Image (tube, rainbow, N blue to C red; front, side):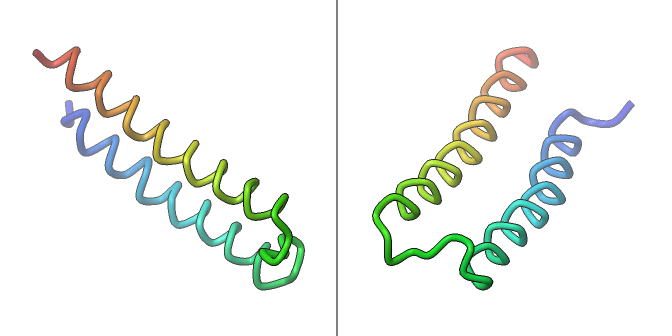
Length: 66
């Protein structure tokens, strides 16, 4: 069995590439125009949610492994 940390790293590394790639594509294509406050809040919420979920998942793994 592999370490849960390796699984966590793989999940957020591969998922992060896809997430940040899609977010970059949305900004590059003009679908999310960062000049508008509404779109900046949306992008900020997406980024905060990604990192909050990764942190929550990491803390859950750390709590279980104690």
